[in-house]
Length: 102
Image (cartoon, rainbow, N blue to C red; front, side, top):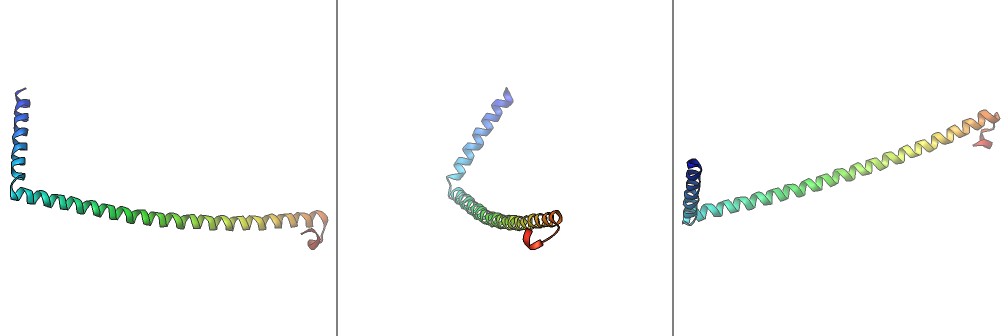
């Protein structure tokens, strides 16, 4: 229990000393520098986040375009394959006339 009370007293004394220091010109200067640094860090993070979002959206757009192009290519090839199978089936089944059956 004595350690707890000593900790509370020490914490209160440190807080009071810090508060007293921050009221001085040097303390106000340091506090101002800390606020400026925090503002700069915040702006830097916002800037990096914005750039990240732009890059990610660009990558997603390119990926979507690539996927659509691939789907169109596969669709065309499947259609051609279907026509070839149909024509081959008709030629083999009816013995013959490619122009008539295709």
